[in-house]
Amino acid sequence: STARPGGHGTVITVAPTGAEHAKSDVPNLPVTIEELVSTAQDCERVGASMIHVHIRDEDAKPSLDPQRLKDTVAALREQTNLIVQLSTGGAVTDPEEHRLRVLDAMPDSASCTMGTVNFGNDVFMNRWEFIVELHKGMREREIVPEYEIFDLGHLAALRRLLDEHGLPAGGHVHLDLVMGVPGGMPGDTETVVAALRMIPEGATFSATGVGRSTLPVMFAALSAGGHVRVGMEDTISYARGERVKDNAQLVARAAGIARIAQRPPLPVDEVRELLGVRA
Ligand code: KMH
Ligand code: ZN
Image (cartoon, rainbow, N blue to C red):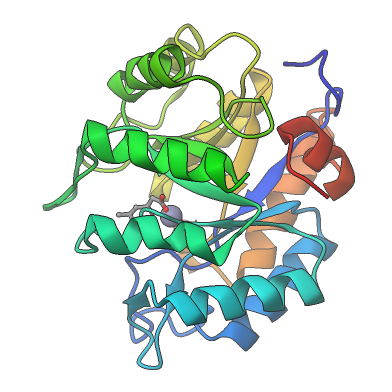
């Protein structure tokens, strides 16, 4: 992956909101379109090139409302230069048809989770046929997928998907290792190394460590040539006993670590080229 456009730089994705934290528990979580845009701008300024978006409704509850998704994509496109990635994962309770409909909001990119996984006390359901529908739906719309890998078996499923159904829009494969979810793979160096052997040839990968695995996963991913995803979807604690101030604080820390690793944050236009996302 290091010989591709983008050289040795790092793609920093911010996942500012997610579907799991309640606004009442985490008051600084961005939930309105205005809060999301302002967070996105702050994160862009300190080194993010892509934003992984979950939206919330008027009551700050997770939502997949089609009009609100379209308005969010439009607002982020108008007011930032970030690559806009919508979550098709939604919340664990979202039905498949609502998750598929996310693609009609026409983001630059969308997530595609590569298998079912226990998710804390819940089950995050991703049937094979649903995965195939998402993959094809994205290709028809020229949306670039980011394959979400919660467990090592999901990498075997990704190989099967590419073998049976071909490459995604843009011709490049990018995936994200989501590590440390209770029920999924652990967030540690050994597991990053195990994943490396199963990542398809020529693919790029980022990694995100949930909760206290945030920093170990970031260091392991950077040293293995990977990219990073950070944000309050995955981490609300900055250090032991210290809450995250805002998403930009997490992006700024990742950018600093990436620079120290001689893997500086990549500008958005280079990331578009790297991932095959249209300008
Ligand atoms: N909220 C999780 C159940 C994704 O965005 O694609 C799923 C998730 C993955 O966050
Ligand atoms: Zn997500």
